[in-house]
Image 1 (cartoon, rainbow, N blue to C red):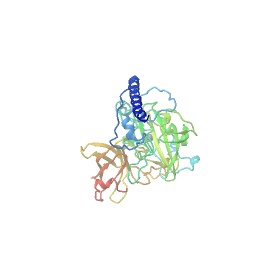
Image 2 (image 1 turned 135 degrees about the vertical axis):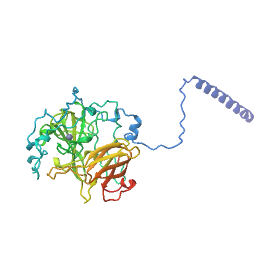
Image 3 (image 1 turned 180 degrees about the horizontal axis):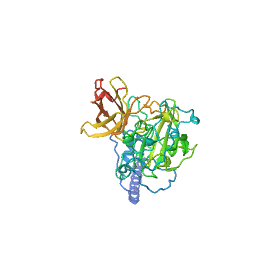
Length: 421
Ligand SMILES: [Zn+2]
């Protein structure tokens, strides 16, 4: 009995195993064929990345991520090439001097009485220098997309690149060099009004976008009683700087796509490039105002717009022999390696008329070069016939500072990029 049980039990197990194995083989062979799976063997841990970072966007390419997508339908407008009179501008109607004093008026919080006479209407009718070459730039001439604001690569946190550019990267979204912020244009004998913003020449109909989020506080003509702006949109942003409100202004629009009181996000279309107001060719005039929404409260937008990828900014000032800031002084940036001129500008002009342009509260600059590819440069000016040069290293997404003075020992380039202004 016991033997039979001992000999019968293994037999049962063997039969069960054989049956089971046979069934398993049948079942495996009966399964539908699967695609071979690749085996992933982790060799290193990769850090989690923000998909919105500019590195990730660059890897994705310069496609739809390069510019903000349109959120509302944009009216089409036919392209009109700018009219460029050979000299002067005979088509513009002069605006009474009372209207061109800068737009300040009592209803905006008190009139500003200039301490010196405003310039005559003669130079005020001078054309904005929009060149055909810039406006008709071929679409293949592509700019790298801006970095994603807010971003500061400065270890000291001095920069405030808080605004995107008001025009897309496949259009002209850099500032016209010949009429930089704080300058009176290239014609010394017939100067223009000191510029309180920057100009981006583009065809009529090019979309103008909000540089940052905030509330539209003006949309239309007659802004601050000045006809020279044409159609204007002003945004009061929902962020400020050191406790002060920030405003951006977009002028000369052919169409206004925003309404007062409307909240907009960065990149939302707010208008179309036009030539309304005092212009000779279509462009958007872009201002940054800090502290108050007034003509006297503008700052150089180049220090507020986020740089292109792999580009940086040079700010600086030119100091005379007695420590005074030299105005309307030509400053040039040369590539240190090739010696080629990269950009040229002039230092700010202060008329002491109550509506002056302003230096940045921190940098205290009197000139700015934006869109400088990262690298090493010479910043050059000429003081009393003596060339003055400073070496500056431009880093991506940062402002480097250059002080040009006769009586100051040149600062090594490595320190110049980090030296406080
Ligand atoms: Zn302008």
